[in-house]
Length: 554
Image 1 (tube, helix red, strand yellow):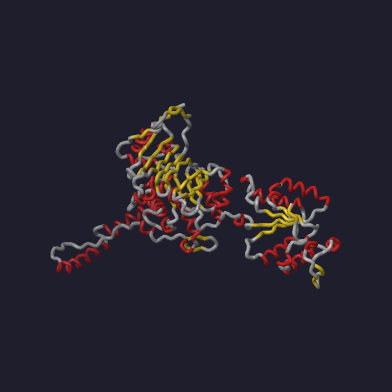
Image 2 (cartoon, helix red, strand yellow):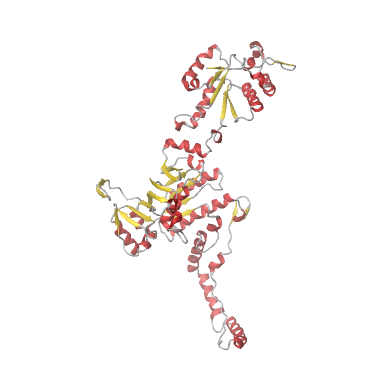
């Protein structure tokens, strides 16, 4: 047991074994843009979902403010909530695995400074505020620590590496060579390492010196001659000129990388710039992942990374989104931590170990971030798909009918006479009340976590008058689904077949539309279907007046 001292009270807490990786365990934000107050604990994989302009990116930028400050040209007034500078901005981040993070530090002086400040605590809190936006304050066991001078450099080495991939970050910023781009840093590092150890390069350096730098080299002699001639003409204008020298500097091999290009063969080999946005986005994320591996193996040995990816699904097909999530899950399970902003149901739908989903909502201009419980997940998925069942499985309205005849008849009837109404999907139960029940159950099982089906009040069932032998089964079905009776969602035709309920109209080919029981029994399924199509394509709206076709509401 251990005593924990907070600003207002002392409490006894269990001492836990140190975490093997340093990660964010809790975040608190106050008055940063639309976020007035938000506090939540985090996991290895964290997914934030919400409508456009609800504040998801503001949350990511609050963390960027914590790690990097305002940045060049940044203004505090731009990030204050409603530009009210009287309210203090606070971004407070709690980390666990602090002892492991300190152990991974490479500079001895920084390592000693951090370990002394931690004083054996595996949990540490840092805070950046608008009062002093250039510095971060450290808290251990609820008490502020005064680490002394030079602490910021030690802190930057200590904290996990923050990688923010925002929607404005394009392929060129990551995959084009510059001194600071991920691909540039990696390629330059690889080149420098290889050249330092390569005997051929060392021999080349000596040859270069002999050819261009030795006093008796032919090239140097000719350059001196040309320089002297230029001097003669130059000193006519500037008499003080005493020497003009032409020299060749050793080649900077980094300059060669400026001309490199990336090609991808995905069936057609072309440069990356010629691929689609989805491929470029995926390549960018892949390079950043490799970059984290490279940094861990070289500059940041063993250090954990924090990946903040805004709209991770951007430009990616759902299948590619699922693969991306799988890759990010691998990272999160091997020491890194992932934070995703998304509008994608694909990234939300699948469960994973150490995954948390957060709902981001805005009300009256203020953003709220709340961890979703398991019962919330189907609703979140439902909303991400547009708030309508049609986006997931079926159109907004659907009708369960017994068989092919009813299906063909109602499909044509609704399309012709009610085409201006919301679309209705018709489901065939294949003439079996048990199948009708299975159809409903199969729909509801998709949303079992809801407890009650989202289709509960949308299903309309129309059945033929059952044979006396089947009446008990129908009664049991209706009793088991009492809401169908209460809401008027279950209808039974007044006859055993829909053919007996068609209007009484003579047709030269098919005889009277309305059939007797004997005539129906003599018809095969093909004739019933043909009649249903004909009646559905021909029936007039006036013929739908309440007659035999009107079903009985049970």
